[in-house]
Amino acid sequence: MSESDTSGAARAAEFERWANVFTAHKAFSHPSELHGVLCGRLAAGTRIEEQQWLAMVCEHMGLADQAMEESDDLAPFMYGAYEKTLAQLQSSEMTFQPLLPDDDYAIEQRLEALIAWVRGFLEGMALAAGASLGQAPDEIRELIEDMVAISQLSEDEESDDESEQQLLEITEYVRLGALAVFTEFNEPEKPAGATPTLH
Image (cartoon, rainbow, N blue to C red; front, side, top):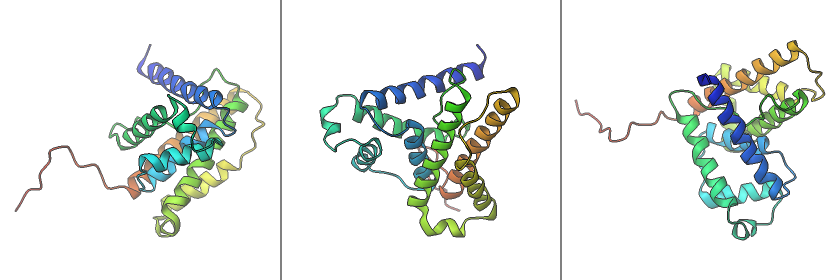
């Protein structure tokens, strides 16, 4: 397997893990949308306390607050997902990927997931950044406008080579866009153990 195949396999497995958790808890929302909300908030510079994040998860999945206590796996999974997502966004290797199903899914399902992710991202970013988005550089504002347009795409896409290619290109645009927003609103991570030098 090439490196892109292995990263693709890892992404597919990650989506399946989220999807299985959502199915097990009979969530009425889409896992891609919740991941988008998280990424939007992190990209806009917010960090979420564990309890606040878990409460957000319950609200998003349509679960009672005590669902976290009643389930052995939900809180550890979701807190791990939070840590992993933040680490990917901070990675200098730009390995971050939106949480989306792989090519085994029909194009309509993949497009639906991408639209859900973008809607979540915009929602999370608006909640976190609020008015400061208006002061963002032009390229960030244009990017957000593009994402709004993507969030309004029709989900009933017929599958052909051209639409497959378009979906790939839009997904990559969204991925790089999320990283651009993160870079804009977040200070670079300081290397561990770095001490300020005095001149």
